[in-house]
Image (tube, rainbow, N blue to C red; front, side, top):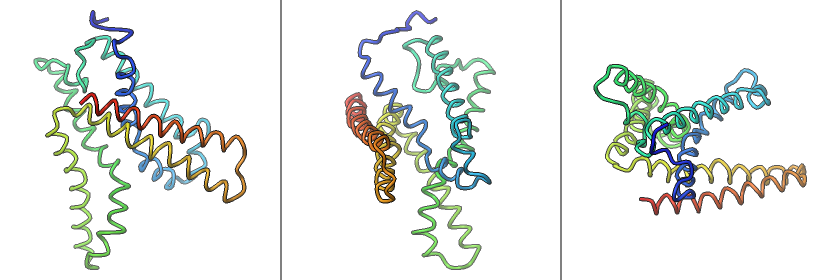
Length: 225
């Protein structure tokens, strides 16, 4: 292990808040998840105990955890916001890793924009476009390119991108991915008269956890800037 590896940090809660925000940001592509389930031939296989969702989450969690652990053991407190920044510049293998990583981001990030693109196109852009198929294709392509390129340009101008990612993750996903779904489940089950004590307790616990984690972790991330 690297000599700078510290098992118990000086400010553990601050580190946990930044970790929580980054973790939330890493799994916040809920639009891709919903779209994938809706387009499956048998959607019931998606949410089974050993279904697509659980297997995917376990694999991604193990991959992220392994990468973070190995990276920290190697570089200690000198670990950068992206582990690729720690790789040496004078070797062909790290350069190939960075190029591969860039291509992975290039082809996977647009998938996370599927839901906002679909909402903007269906409800705001398409109704103002002429019926010509060529124009529709052109405007749709420009919308997709803009929604992908604009965040990339913004992120390239921000020197503290790691803190921004943690802040956005801590603010958005506890609300959109935890609190709102719990409120919606509570409302739907109450309306359909299927609300049991277990579902009620579960939803209330998720709502409290979502609100508490959003406020506390967002505050810590903003204070860290």
